[in-house]
Length: 217
Image (cartoon, rainbow, N blue to C red):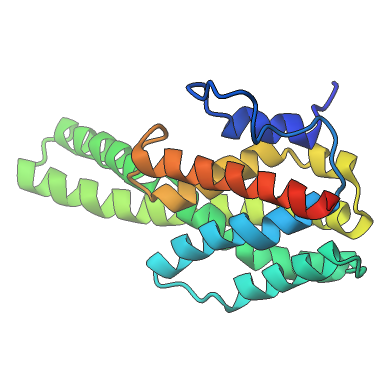
């Protein structure tokens, strides 16, 4: 299986199909790896930081990761174990915020209520059971989802960042992480094509263009 370049993966997620301008701001096919660090330290950190702050999270770990990207963008080596330690808690929070818990909760509640009614429970009993089951199911599912994705992706991105290797970055499938950033920003009830999602894509797209300019000048 041929892995698309990280530039192609990210472009697929961020490009606006309604944008008909003359190509201004389009990404070149190949860019220095420093672009990745500039992007993560800039637009990515800003977007994720806003999502975290909005949900009452602690920005300290996010600021530490931003600082590491800034050091790497300036040419300072950052070891893989350092990247892993910085990435995992940040990714856990990102994937937690990105988890579609409202949709999962609704589906779990509906299924549990239907099950309870087949057992002859009253409407009130069934609804109470449905809410209790859905809350517990959603909390566990969200935690498992966030932890599993954080562990796997922290390891993959740590390898890419420590080596400054664009191919390793592509093999970590950054298009999926970009989608997680957008979902984290839009919130659990946000629509994939809603105003907030379009705003997030535009900010990440513009930030990536700025990162290219910083890295090549």
